[in-house]
Figure 1 (cartoon, rainbow over the protein chains, first blue to last red):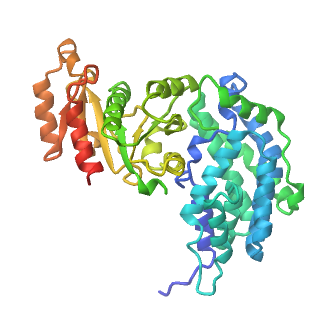
Figure 2: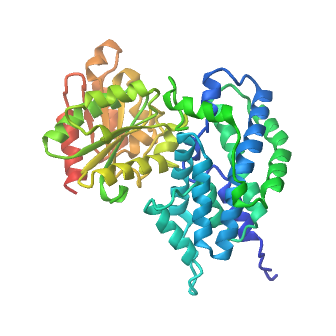
Figure 3: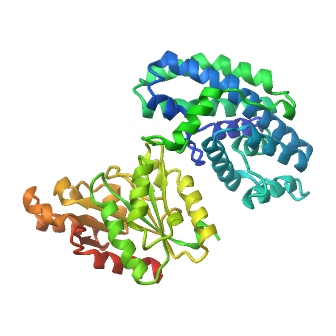
Length: 240
Length: 206
């Protein structure tokens, strides 16, 4: 029996790898303000959690991170370093709480160390990646996680939409994992919340995958206030 | 300069075994031997805890060489599967203090299976307490068997908890083979010199 090469396998496996909590970029230390919601007794049950995460998706992940990721993917595809750095700068500017920025840039730096720069071919097609990795390593650019994710995904053959979907999915599972460790949620309840959020993930990615970088903005005042209060929280298990 | 350029010593072990007490004993001795030391504590719960820690080393270490790293309620993940946030903190240390000699990374309290990722710790100590049961060594937890040095702490409590130090010694020798273990009482400092000797010989002179 002969083996037929599967051109989609690499991209599919990359999507799994990037959205897997096994990826060692410190995702398990980030709660993006969720810990503060729990500390203040604002989340009681699975319904609260579902509503909160749907709001995160519609107000932060979609209009902010998905726009950044999609445009980073496009800039990487076009070999446009200037555009890539501009996306990173804008995401930094619209991410209000300090700890949100730190969680994102620390994870971005680690993803960069792990996966950026190892796909350079003999024709110098990894030049943009390497220049971007240098800029991240030397603090010339913040290196936000969705921006690095966009570059990695593009270089490894994921479409923009696939990259946005896998990123939004991993954001949700990361926060659901945090919720389970912070509060009292059953594993079946958490899976039910995840299932209920899947259409929201698809919806926000469809809505924002083609947005221009200038559309990048977040409007989630309570989540941002929770993120800021967390800096001085009486109890902290998470870095954000 | 980055985390690969500095010696890193991990301290793991169950909750309440004396990891912090050992760190507080080791730091002044290392500083007295002219090493520049950084300390990272995982799972610090409050800013107040971090301040207390920083205060106890106020005369010994620069304040920005004492840091907490929150591990999202996953202490073993932070030192084993995904040490990225600890490594990022060590990178911050080395950027500000290029002459840094050694970083002590204290894990959050965990179970007997916790081991350090070799990219995070060049050498790791596993600290257990006699008060947690004299049978701990013979359970052969990966922490006990794989650590570079097993530290059996709180020897002063042995008579109060019906723990037989001879049994612990025999069991430790049996499960550790040729690998070393030491008894300590971090309250009065007994045995700390032996720990230092191992750390200096295996890490700092290596």
